[in-house]
Amino acid sequence: MVTKISVRGLDYAYGGQAALKNVTIDIPADSVTVLFGPSRAGKSTLLRCLNRLNDLIEDELITLRGQILLDGQDIYAPGVNVTELRRRVGMVFALPLPLPMTLRENVTYGLRMRGERNHARLDELTERSLTEAALWDEVKDRLDEPAMRLSGGQQQRLCLARTLALEPEVILLDNPTSGLDPLSTAKVEATLRRLKETYTIILVPHSVQQAARMADLAVFLLDGEVVEAAPGVQLYTRPREKRTEDYVTGRFG
Image (spheres, rainbow, N blue to C red):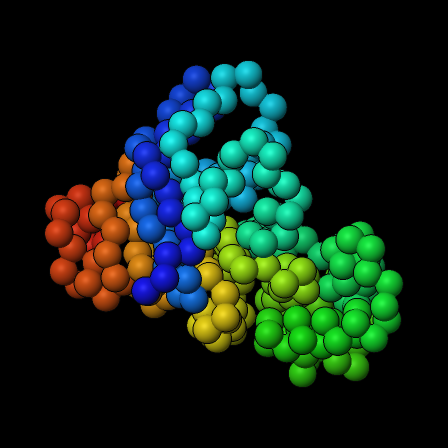
């Protein structure tokens, strides 16, 4: 399997506290990699390191050592275009945050900020992105309505479509179904299963059960360290590490 992202000996600390310690993992292309573990395990911190969102934290005590390679290139090397990196490695957050504008304008916002003015191209990417996010059939006659009229599950898929419109290679998702009902959660999960045929997906799930359902590769983090990384089925049914077994069977966390 082709490796899309390699993390090598990553240490990350902020506020004088170590958040990630010697993290080394290979993330395969065209698959779902799940980062799971208890609170403060370092999952979201690692996710944000993968597209340098942690650059936005103002803290004199931030330190980062090690490497993150995207297609073999160090994303923290001097001269890296961070804006382009964040296009290639898009992010969807736990709380759906549609912009206060229409559905169409939400999907095309990033494209228009990038200078795209061709209406045919914008329409093409709007339909394609909403289709990929499994939302087109539900909203194709409502594109000029305010996005805030959508349900929570639809808003989350709209935010996903907004990311997809920028044609990323990797999609990072931080607890994207944490506030959704079971039906909406199932729709988002089904969408991600389809998208992994084209995109590299890295997911912080809202539960161990979701992690088990979604993971092609599962990575268990604890106190900022990788305890175990293995194919999803193997890790949840035959974990090598006792700490992994204790967590997935509910003995702690």
